Image 1 (cartoon, rainbow, N blue to C red):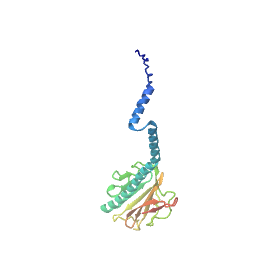
Image 2 (cartoon, rainbow, N blue to C red):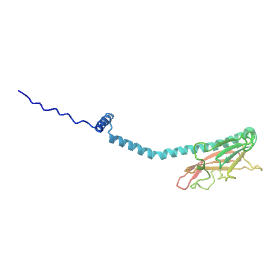
Image 3 (tube, rainbow, N blue to C red):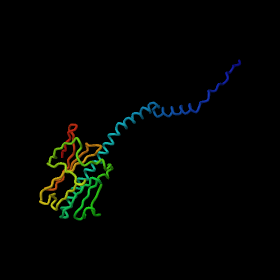
Image 4 (cartoon, rainbow, N blue to C red):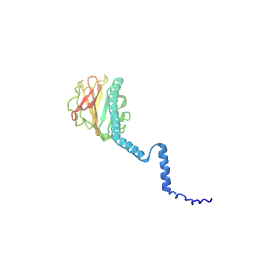
Length: 220
């Protein structure tokens, strides 16, 4: 008995695009994610990054501005300690124009000498003109808890001279109290104050809190 065999019909050749799609589908199926699923995951990650970015940037600014506070406080305390150690008057100077703090007097020489100890409060990455001397709009005008209040600048600078006993007094030996206020132009909530009590030269730090909007106060 003779059997008739049908002619062999080869499948149509695959185009390069079909080959690439087939290979991609095989790769994604092996990893457990399809193309649409992968796109959804990437979309979710992008949304999370966009939402979290402002918080990250705000936290970085807070950390940087906290460095300004530490620098002001440590320089004031160092100035007082140097005055007591050297048994002579030593001066702390804040230059608002250049955003620098300077220690001069005693072994540090006269103001402007190469021996002055000078540092910039903008070294932590802040833009200098964003560091504001004063109180933010939401802050109370009342004095701090120790009775000191905002001390205005003279010729865009503030000087505090510690005597050999650590005090800050005038020519008639009357104590001179001072309070320096700072805040970040782009983040007023980071405001702080540093007070110096003239009688003993004690340096105190105050942080800004806002219990209700527009009613900010300073607490030790």
